[in-house]
Length: 286
Image (tube, rainbow, N blue to C red; front, side, top):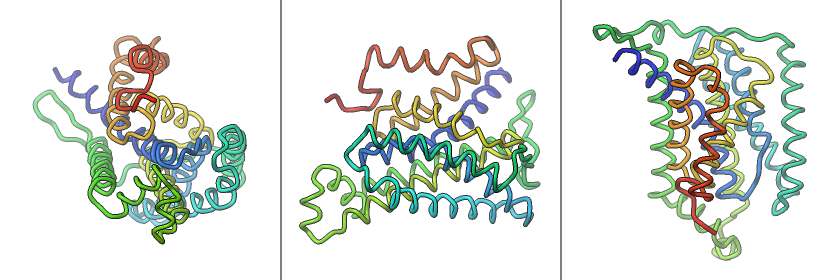
């Protein structure tokens, strides 16, 4: 029983980290129709800038703020100077964002050095709770709570606020929204920045979770995020969170019971879903 609970908590925590990265990706693609392969680079930059500030100041919260700020700034620069010229052209988006992804990874080595950075868990989130034979690690619960809060906030904004209505209307008919006097380009830029900030937050939270961060982590987790977005359905936040949990838990159990298949289980999961639902779990056909 304790193994089942521990593996489930581990899987949920991993799933929420992937969700923070995939949520921004699915927002940017589903709402703005932009294929952003540089998203993993924003994740890695959030990790390095946040952990570096956290180590220098000793404050985990300041590290989180620094990571989110880095995501917002990089998101603004990326959308303004790289993405805007290639709106509507997926081939150019793929090529240019792949190039940006490589540049961002190499720039991490230039700014922070080529070595890995270690990250410790803040003292108030260290340790665990014990319930009989079951041990729950506090930091993993913290990640699950943050992921659930982010999902709730995004879902509420998109469904129940004026800005959510504008974004959804802009996706359907940009010209109509523009004719109403709303600067839809600025709205989309803010959506892009929000997606970049979520990716950076996910990178920052990964540091104490894994204990170490490295420049190539963006590409590794970026692939996982794309798998989650495909499984959940393009543009669906609900689909992304469920797919991320599915990927996290299946990876956790496979790593324990069948380690040889741990790396392949995500691709296998995606293949099975696409066979029965090509549009993803919550995607809309056509």
